[in-house]
Length: 98
Image: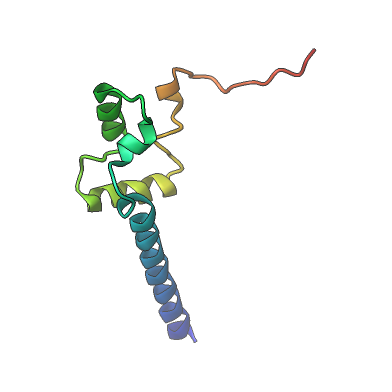
């Protein structure tokens, strides 16, 4: 019974890795064009595009980009919503109208 569970867990882990890699390819690598240019928009400057490429590690090889994406997923860190990049060090509060 234990061997069966171990085989199933290993199989499930391999499926999760394969699905995450295929999803990464579909959303990041397959769409045509530069992802930094798509993120920056039509009025982007070269400095904006270079900054986005550096923050999202788009100049790294694809396997490093994939590893970085998986690492940020499991450590709950995303490069797009960093408080440090927004200049805020305290949690934001909403106005209650009082």
